[in-house]
Length: 326
Image (cartoon, rainbow, N blue to C red; front, side, top):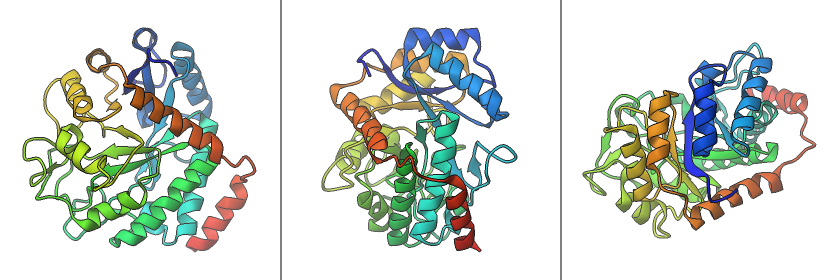
């Protein structure tokens, strides 16, 4: 991966790449493209879209939100249904789900999967997390999250843990408004600390008032440098990607949102709207990647390549998971 890459992942509008979108990919060289349900109809159509993206932007990382349950872009009848994290009540079932999701994603052409969720379920927390959380017990979240991530890596895709430093206690949906919490707790941080070795981590669009009363975590140098990266906090050393910058928790033009996030210490800006002008604004606003960022990106790819198990059999693993969940 050369230094000419733009450290942003963008969305596209529909089920086929338009000429203008292809031109933007060629000229701006974004790190990657994220796809959503609006982009996916069936395996043949998806294969054509992936091929078109890779032709316009060779080497692009293809990203998908595919946790299971509510958050799934590959769905029946063409792909398997996977349970939400809450139903994965042991580490083995979490590993199996990670492997099964990863195998489908890899076969479809994806490199990055936005899972596992490491947020701890909390009484009164907004339902936007809900059954996406493995448990209300931080130790169980840590263990099952690690297992799911291990399964994804065994399938050959890169997991993106989320949403640091913890979204479970938030009482609002950051898709719609900016949630606020007084600060973070040991329970919030424990699953992230236990999984600090994972290759990618996604930030939370939440304002933690005692840490930074002016900025959400995604755009807070105090939180990124003083908590997420600090050995005294989470101690994360991999790729730090923003949550979707198009969410209404943030304000300002798309490019300004992205620039603030990278200035605060994020490595990669994620903007998912698929609106061409917004994507162009983001790609024009973000600075070139640092050498540290490029090294982290390379390490993530190497981890997925090193841990992939080509002997995994989908039907066997699917049957084992079904037996565990019955």
